[in-house]
Length: 268
Image (cartoon, rainbow, N blue to C red; front, side, top):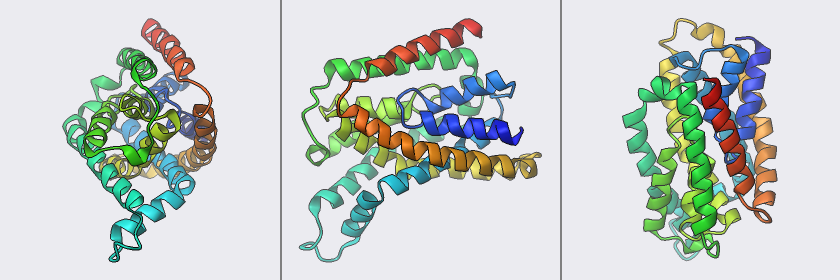
């Protein structure tokens, strides 16, 4: 892998991690266009570790929310703590459990047959279906403070769908939130905050596998380039998407996923 290819993969990761169009699916498609393999552990390790660039973008963008959540959850003086932030932190923890359970079960499949071009195309069609379901059935009137533990668990199960390559985490969690009647911007806020504890878990698995790869030493510089590219692009992508969701629907993203999914299946 050249540094230019690594930068392109990082840019694709940054653009598609938060847009509801599937970063994993687009990384697989980009690898095919660049003539790089996507159905091996090296590709899986690279893609997951480069994803940590977008995790850094999340930390920077939501730094005030995250600091408030951590402070209030750890506060010894309940009178000074803001229940909404402490409660939000516990809801995020509840929503994380389904992804942990399903992720451990699927950890071997994600780097194998499920990462093929045909499967990616079908999973992109599934992503489109999730977005349409969210728009059709979501009443979009609640905010995050009104979520219950049951709502958080429901959204968490939706997030676990994103462990399949080609299913967008953003689309899945947005759909989960909107089908529990969150507004689009509030569903996005909870969806992105949910990603904060999940992404490092996946990265830990990839990091442990990195040491077992024969070509590990040659991956360090491409990883660094991809990480920086995904962090910069990801930060600006979050800002754009939150503004977009305050005014517009998810249907254009659904249409895009349908077109790309059909093309992926056709050219496979």
